[in-house]
Length: 610
Image (cartoon, rainbow, N blue to C red; front, side, top):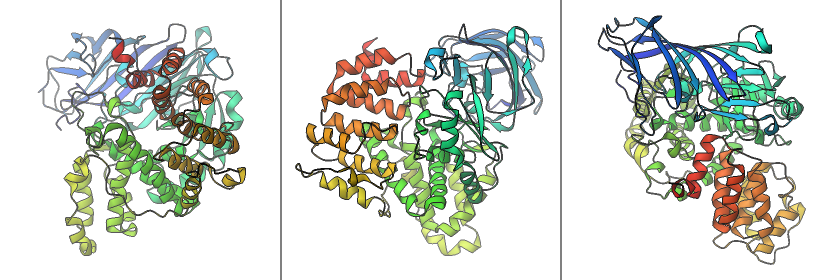
């Protein structure tokens, strides 16, 4: 197979990783991983390639052996954004299907973009340091040389030595073994092939509790009871709903690791252990749909994977669709449309931020020469959802529900691009039993769907859960409106978010006095739900409620999730650049390296520093 991922320099058309063994010791004092990684690579040619090329970034490589023998190798000069290729000589090549073992001794460096190291003081109970990884999109190459592309899938063995508890994206094999000096060796196996971006590690003061017959929650001991309460009511219900929609769960356990607050995403769908933001633990079970999303990735993204970040919508669009189907099956059909309307607002905001003619508003985004993190936005999630939802409406839900398991079965443990998806859809619905759909399907304009910029066509939504929010928002257009706590009684947190989103979209902002009164009377300022608090702050900043500026700065020092951090910095920067820069400078070491780099670009300080 030809190389079809522009975000790798590896020659995976000639060699493909089949198994990876990671032997690492976690050194909290020096903030590095050290060890030996063994790649088992299968030759794709008959002695047609005399070198293996791997991706790497900011690594210290000390030794490379091929089939236990010393080899010639070289780390080439760094070229942004893809890093420093590692060239390993295999002079005689290898016969087709022959497996070559490559042993690499290495250490990570202080420029590693996949790891965040927290001191004990930065954790909630302040008892032990904490380390976690985040490899999506192309950060696994800063942990070890690899074929860092979603087009290659490998099984994994983890052998991780640490003074603290370790979790990984594999199933624990046996009890940890005590080592000299008080360290313990933790072993995990991942027998389902996964791409490099799903390699995951975390270590720290971690305790676990059951949240279902095949699920655990793991987090800091002082946060365990709250996290257990947040998830235990819904976990197995989510799993059963997903299995009914697709097919039985393939990974054994489904666990959730609630990370410290600097984690940059809502969740990361690492197999076995979803890594989740602590903002989902809001004390009201109102944000657990993040878990429905990450669980859906167990099929979409993890089992069936886009072959490159250009086709990322296949991961996220499908996952948004499955998440909404799961929630609708549990809470009722209106919740599908309710979530989709919220998503449409997020999509409008993202496209407005880029500009409707920007290349990054396409469903399929060319990635040659760019860092995939730069193109990361709501677009592949929500525009991807609308692609899937459009096809569902075209053929009818009953028919589409037959396609869902077929698609995931056909591409299970494989990677595909948008055209593979198109071919699979056309092949399935080309069957005789769907002949009545032939004319409809022939009219699908695939190229426009894949490459048009801006918003997709907007479907009609059931707005029954939203109308009440819009009605309340309309009352706020009257400058003399007197709010009452009863206005928001009985509204779910997501309905309050819709209300705030509508107010944020007013052509004229609320007066400062109005916006301040809203925060007080509706209790947004005192909410423990970060989603609500952040949404209110956007309204307040637009209305220049100066009393909220320091509160925004305070929140930006408590939360590292990019969904909140980046927009809040942009909004704060518009009204008080000095405070936004001061706040970033104060908290930049708290943020994950990915988040820090993106905020630097948002604030323009990355350019100013050059």
